Length: 283
Image (cartoon, rainbow, N blue to C red):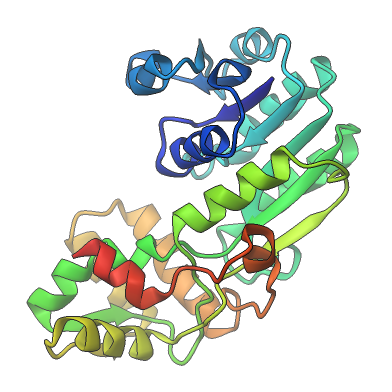
């Protein structure tokens, strides 16, 4: 059986759907979720739904019963990620799983992003655990930006602090497809995949792509990191999270979200989704 954590989240749900699409019987897929009622659609497809909380080791141990392979989708609770991930790794070890795939961050070990710290800690814990693992180092999701296309069109601007830094983004669907392929393939233990979009772009080029797709003028406005943080807080983000996002832009300006790796398109057997196609999908 294959277990997917965080399966009611955007990436986890797509991974489950891709597993089914690729031929894994639904009753051989387990989803470990905090709120089983949110997994009703998956349950109706025959997926096994088990209640589990990243912060509750006993619930994880119960959820892992009979499981052979695990996709650990990284927690969204920044600051709590590492201890939560460690609990999942411990449960996987106790269950003697054959393979654990972890969704890390692109070029984790040398990343300048503050967001990378807990990913690095998790990777180190995985290596030390003795659990057979494969690292799925995901680049930025295109949706991180295209989710706010409407706001960019309203104001005629994309805001950020990335300078000329390039983003090698891909759609969540691309990353989910890759995860489903890896977790169902043989001879994956010990591998690390740097998963990135085929075509990188600066935020100025992203703004130009919005203009091209929509026919409306959108420009990129580069801001000092403190000012960009204030803008993010002003649109409703918690201050700590806004600071991390702004820090990620600064990290991108240093090359932290760029990669010329073709691991992703090689795994999925097609070009990654272009940023223009992701913009169109968001409209």
